Image 1 (tube, helix red, strand yellow):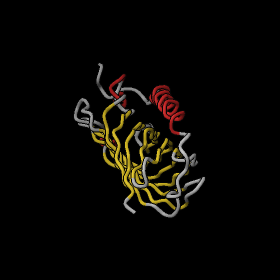
Image 2 (cartoon, helix red, strand yellow):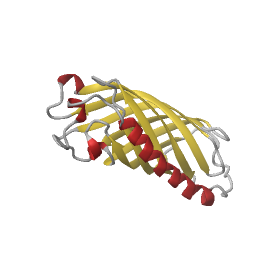
Image 3 (cartoon, one colour):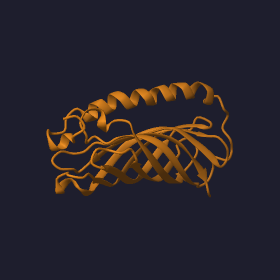
Image 4 (cartoon, helix red, strand yellow):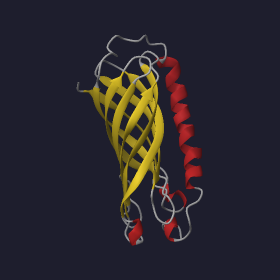
Length: 203
């Protein structure tokens, strides 16, 4: 029956492949559209010293739990903060990221994750592509799901994106993608988040 959770009927398969087919294409398009106009901006001297930024994003969430298209492109929001450790040509920072699906699901299901880990970027003036990895937790709830699936699970995430330092205080993040892997029964759960937003430097 359409709309029923696939994890209650068949083992996980194909979700990660569908997600990787959809999201990287969108990310590549955003990067190609942004790169030509922003890469020519000259670097500024303010990219020196430690920084603390806090930010937020609107995102599309692939829950990887429900059958068919019920898992894809659910609205989500993300909050993040980072502390820059090294700056210059290869910026390194520690980042904490919280993302939560807000789109309604059959049976009032919800998912959210909290990940902490390093990011490393490459500075091209004001433009900065970056890669990241995080370790943390993922939380799942769904009315009628098996008890072993409910609650909090160990999670790891890999991803990357693109930042543009608009001013000394404001940094745009037009692309931020994270692929997650949860310790989930009976098969690992692989949600993913594709977002865009901005952050503000508080220190």
